[in-house]
Length: 301
Image 1 (spheres, rainbow, N blue to C red):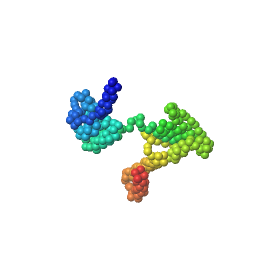
Image 2: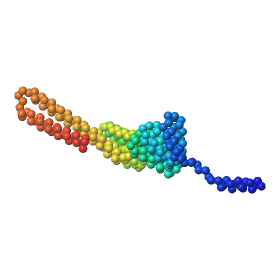
Image 3: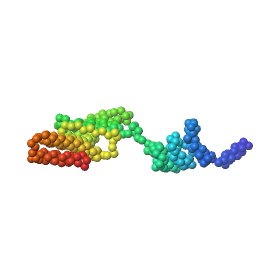
Image 4: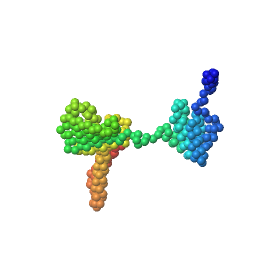
């Protein structure tokens, strides 16, 4: 008999409808909750935001409308709830919330636009930035020393006057501990034969030395490695050096112009000044002015 009772209960259970995991909020409830986002009671505001974040697509339009407000608390709450909805697993809800946030970004309310934009395009934190990248080149006594740091790796390259090349690499291992290796060759060809990877590093960073001549230093720092490749970076370095040279040339011509002006002033103090004495100085001034223009064009082509 008890078996018959169990069977009957099982049949009844199967016939009962399955309860939905989440019940959609009706329009009246949504309106009430959205209004509570501007309550003077923080507990009420928090409870309303939590309830709305558990809702579905029915809360999105009212939230967008409410976000067009002068109350920063209401704006922040509306954007926050939309951000919560955007993080839900429901693909359709996620898409609808994203579209709503974009609508706020494009809207006229600047406060809502800024906050929605931070959700869709969050700022990159310092920890997310690529490790500082830099290249330093030092040349003296016919020896070139290159130090490069890129994505947490450090490379030290020395090329002596004899042609001998040493490459030292420091890279983190699987546990994040720095591991240093050193390679050397009598020249570039010897290094390539002994250690192809070290030679590839030498070729990569040796390009920077072409931007300087004689005994000089070159420092290039990147907060985060730019999208440009090595050749584009090299072009930027070349432009930097060319700009420096043009600036020095410009200063030189300015000094020449000033000296010519000083000569002209000295002549004007003469009582028996003759026209023929002025002509060479005026010619000199005109030539200096032309050189000054040419140097300026190099700086601002």
